[in-house]
Image (tube, rainbow, N blue to C red; front, side, top):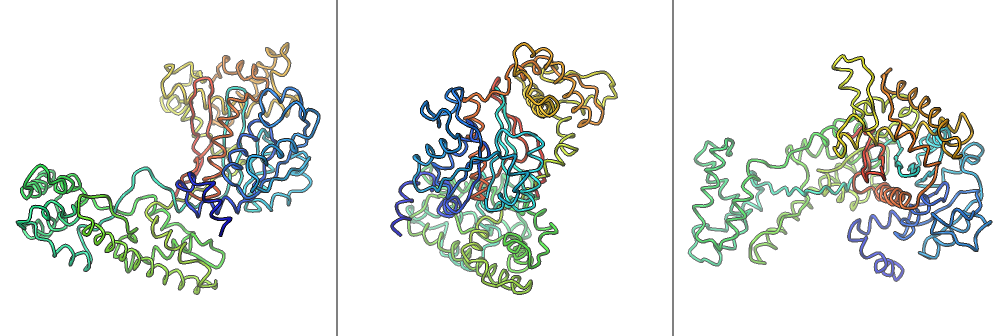
Amino acid sequence: MEVRNNNNNKYDRQLRIWGDQGQLALEQANTCLLNCGPTGSEALKNLVLGGIGSCTIVDDSKVEARDLGNNFFVDWESIGLSKAKTVCNFLQELNDTVKAKFLEESPETIINVNPDFFSQFTLVIATQMKEQSLLMLDAICRKQGVMLLIARSFGLTGLIRISLKEHCVIESKPDNVIHDLRLQKPWAELKRFSDEFDTEIDDSVIHKHIPFAILLIKACEDWRKTHGDSLPSTSKEKAEFKNLLSSKRRGVDEDNYKEAILSAYRVWSSPTISSELQKILNDSAAEVNMNSPDFWVMVAALKEFIANEGEGDLPLDGTIPDMTSTTEYYVTLQKIYQEKAESHVSSMEARVREILKRIGKDPQSISKSAIKLFCKNSRNVRVYRYPSLEDEYNSCIGGELQRLLGLEENRESGNGAQVMVGGEAAEKGSPSHAMDINATFYLLLRGVDHFAAAYNRYPGIFADEQEDDAMKLKSIATTLLSKMSGGSRAVLSDDLINEICRYGASEIHTVASVIGGIASQEAIKLLTRQFTPIPGVLMYNGIDSTTTILQLTTCI
């Protein structure tokens, strides 16, 4: 208990973001970092500071003098020593509760010789790795059910990519919170509480402290009596409904009526089941069996709840917005909503237990706290499915690349002329300009890996060969683009090709810190199963300080 309290004090600020459950998930995670250059070190640093449970650094290189210019986790004394050991020791100093280990081995060797090594980890962060090794690593991680996060810095550009079969998010934490107040169909306890109020009461103090939710319930009842039990639907009727509320307001200081008028839309625009959630409910994975994850068991229970106790609605989350009221009225109203939410949790729990029993699993294998969390967030649960790297490289990103490069429009217009891509065809500073350049950088980063496979080095390593390297890279990248875009006759920008060659595969610390920072943020999303992860390849352009996401996932 004392250790837990100490951790609560240490991680106080982040606990306010992802809570005890998120922190516990971090502390139970085992992460592997492949290559600890500046990009990998920056990513792991943030996870160590955040309280990751344990981490293992895999890198066979030695610290060189040039590393001192872009990696804060090496020093003069460590030149010639193991980079993995040096970075591990410095990171351990940042948080002594993290179990940090290192392995002086080439990631490529482990991938080829000992693929089972990765099965012990929750998450693998692969940095600065070539395409062929990533393809093998992705297949290994998918087979073993290990999450894979790819991060790469290359000069003034970089990318981040998540790869796993399926990622289910319960706490997606959307920016806009929707309060489900059920104003159109209050249940018995809420109706009785509403009936206790008289909007015609003479007492001005009580009149100005009736919660707006009660005002709307009563106004809704009055409206239905005179409109055939229907709710306002046209613009004229909605205005009349607001006028009905305004007519009962006795003074400008009655903020509760002002809140009721502003919240009148809740009467005719009650929260519904979103299309995203409906896809999840209809997904084949909701037909559960004994191998189904807990998430899908709860989805199956939710589907049954909606059809029965929910009467077409989702479970209440038990929260209400702030509103002008007396403490007594507000607390009573809050309690009514919380008790109803608890009853919904109990109904969901019974259905979860029954489903678990039906499919041959322990009926108690899913805790009530997990079911309660699911009910509270059921409106915003999300599922992301990422294609494999092999699918991405062979086919599935082709359409997205065409869209970002503007090749679709050219094809649809029937214009067979060559198209210049790389930002030259779009107005500088425009969104299309940024998308065009960043998509071209994605293509060129794939091109440099093909270049390295063909010539056993990256383009631009030798200054006197940059011009020849640029021509070779252009040929490789043009072939790649044609293959990925179905035979497009696009022409790549010479400026961007020369820029990539000028980088010489360097890792600049400012870019590495951005890529590493975003990578650690995505790692936390994956490990805590909170917030929504990047749905594809995120390209970072340090020249213009822009980012573009090449959409990959199937979000259901």
